[in-house]
Image (cartoon, helix red, strand yellow):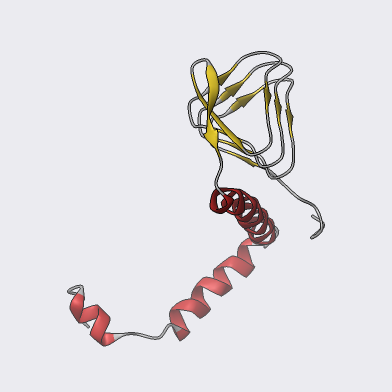
Length: 132
């Protein structure tokens, strides 16, 4: 993945079919987007929304409901959140790719080293009721 690429956020169990989702757009969990939908950059489709065929969700707007309709404009903070979420998930994908590339022996060695060199925090352990 190139660091200069931008990404959008698509939530779990979203159904997107024949759509265009621009960079830094947000599609909430369980949303359904039908054929021809366009979600523009910095636009948000709420969780569980049903966006009808050939609908355009414009820049900076939140759409939700069944069928989805305009709810309000996004705040500057929400637009920043969308951009940051996409970056966070991109970085997490890189971490998972690196972890999945490891062999079983590498994983077992790391587990053993973590156990061996883990620093115990006796004060924290006593707070949560762990006895040495």
